[in-house]
Amino acid sequence: MELKRDHKQTEVGAIPAEWETKKLGEFVRLQRGHDLTEHERRPGEVPVMSAAGQNGFHDKALATGPGVVVGRSGASFGQVHWCGTDYWPHNTALYVTDFCGNDPRFAFYFLKAQDFSRFNTGGAQPSLNRNSIYPIPVGVPQLPEQRAIAAALSDVDALIGTLDLAIAKKRDLKQAAMQQLLTGQTRLPGFHGEWEVKRLGEIGSFSKGRGLSKGELADSGSLAAIPYTAIYTDFAEVIACSKITNFLTSTSSVVIINGPHLLIAGSSNMLQNIGKASAYIDNSDVAVGGDIVIYRTTADVRFLSYLLSTQPHRKRVVFLSQGSTIRHVYRSTFEGYQIELPSHREQTAIVEVLSDMDAELAALEARRDKTRALKQGMMQELLTGRTRLV
Image (cartoon, rainbow, N blue to C red; front, side, top):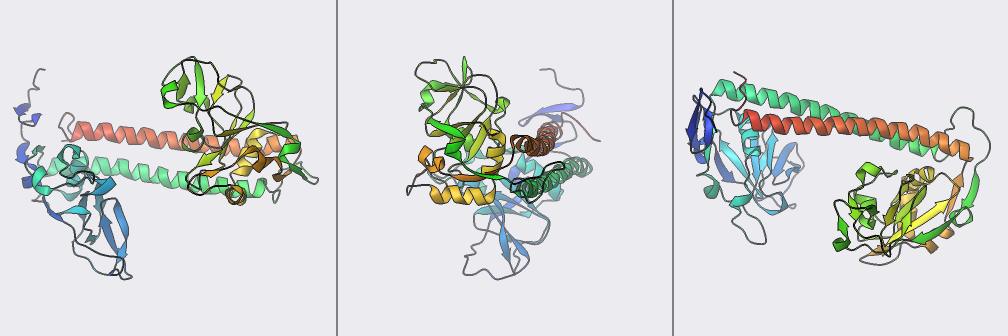
């Protein structure tokens, strides 16, 4: 690759000519955090910064902000976090004690862009030793460029934060709308009359999927497939076909549905997942995995999916589930399950309102995800000097 005219070749690679080559230990100085047991914690406003980020508060600070911590152990090994105030650095993290004249915010982004995974000095429990990463060679811009890079990335972070707040607010509004509309507390214009109490077994029939082993599933194939775990990991109340990521190359001995069906997760070791429902409404064939309760009904399955995801019904389904370590629900769990049901026309009208809110949520989430991807690209360009701001 041809070297740019204003770049130089170093052990880091090609970097701008005026950037310096240093060791990571010359860029920042790190120290292991300090123990703080739950018994020792006292009420206060000082953030406790651990490997996973802020972990509660204390009444005493051991480090002056702004600060940067790096996950030292456990599942959050190598994660980098920012704290804008004085803080208590926890034993599970390394923290910057000296920025060595560099801009703290730039140092945060710079460390965040590093891959510390290859410096694991632990065994089953990952561990990061500062002496192992100090020799890493790095290319460092001058302070004005550091500040320009930090400001640009901070602006993107601020936009992501704004989008996160908008998404949280929209989710709260949706939950409030569900509580009002799905219980009849609030009626849409033009709808009156009493709702009927129905047992699910009265208005539909239940069946079961067939087990799909990991060996049968692929990223592409002739038939889309929904394993039971996808009900609570991949889908919201309505299954978007674009979210189906599993396929079968062989279609022998599988349970296939098409058209409106309600799919209910029949087992899980986590209470928040057991009995979670999603509505499949596409007319394309799809294979349904084992431990999925399949429900076909004359009611709008989207209405039922939204209804069963409300807090009162979630609690009720969890209460009806069986088992100890692994919880289960069955067709017998739901055949006598009672719900209040409006006319089909009102069901559809309620679903349209909630679907519109889902579409707004999806648009916000897509914008946030694109902004996050943009930030990653910016970090790659700015922190290597391939793109300059000064």
